[in-house]
Each structure stands twice: as structure tokens, then as C-alpha cells.
Image (cartoon, rainbow, N blue to C red; front, side):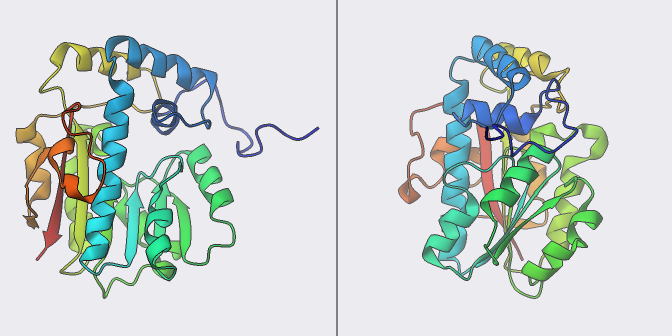
Length: 267
């Protein structure tokens, strides 16, 4: 009989929910456990458009990657990449340019294990298990050093991950350290959940995630914008996801605006 969960690393406590797997559940993926689905259902009970919000964020990632490719970028570092689902970064870029390089970074063992499975045989893509809040560990990893040429512009993605970084860990400082590590001309895509539009519902989401592996920290527009310090923010600026470059693909115009997004260029 085939092993039904061959993508689950040995020793994983499946009773502890994780953000990567809850996000996978909200996106309709199949790489999540009962504990993740319990949390996901709690989120949907208080945030009925939770799936649409997750989808809107995912769509922004695709549009940001397409914009980066239009700007001539052919190497990408996806921090807090989560569990791969259809339309992941390497699929988007390598469809247009098979030589484009992609490195995924996540600290969730299941996300890394599944990434390794789908990237098997792909010489231009790799995955690193590391905490993105420790840039020195990420940037010194052999996979990153092998695939990413830091003498050329890099497409850096921190999508749907900064709201898991506590104030104590300094999300703006984490972004700044990666910004300082990439060369001028690099493009940095950031997105962040906010409670600006649904304070009560989002407060309940924070409560639902409190005892998971990854508590959440929603931030206002005024708190998110400084994370673009030291960059030239591309038009249309820092805006709700549906309002960012809808011409590049489905943006869910008129949909939930609970994710702020933007892309900055290091100058």
C-alpha cells in the first residue's frame, strides 16, 4: 500500500497548525492536516471572504513576478514561500525563460519537503529551510549562493509573510537587511494583511492563530509603508492588492482590500 503522506517529513507533529498549511487550506490546496483545517475553518467563520483574501494575495504575487520579468529580472528569491501550489514562482518565470533561477525559503518542514519533491530535477530552482528573519543564514546558504548572482538585480518576494513577524523581530529591519544585500535595480515585492477595513473580524483571526505555530500581527497602512524605506516605490504605490496593476492579470477588482501590497526598486 502506498504511503499516503510521503511528503510529510519524519518527526513532524501534525497536531500543531502552521501558517503555511493554513494558507494552503485557504487556497484550496491538499497539503494540510486536520489541525490546520480546524484553524482555517475558525478563520472562515469570522472572515467569510478569507479564501478571496488569500487568493487576492496570491494573484498579487503572480503580477509582481510578471512585472519583475518585464523589467529584465531573471532570478528570484522567495522568502516565506509556503507550500507550493499551482502557479508558483518557478512555474511563472520558467514558462517564459527556462534559464531563470528561483530559490524558495521557508522554515516549515512540510513546505520545504514538498518543494523539494516538485523541484526534483530542476537545476535552476532550489529550496532552503531557514528562518527568513535570520538573513545571514539565508544569504549564506549554499543553495542561495549557487543559484543567485548578487552582482545582478534580484526579484525579492516577501509575500503574505511579514504579518507573521512580531514587532520584537523588527519586520522593517528584516526587509532592510535584504534590501541592503541585493544590488541596485533589484525589485522587492511586499504584501501585508491589515485590520484597517475589518478591525473586529481581523481581531478574531489574530485570536484564532494565537496558539498556532505562527501568531499573526496585522498592521495599518502607516505601519506598513515604512518597510519600503530606501526604495523607490513603483506606481501605483502602496495600495490594496486589487488596485495593483490589474492589467497584468486577474486582480480581483472590487474584491477584498485587506492586503496592502507594493513593489520597491533599490536605487
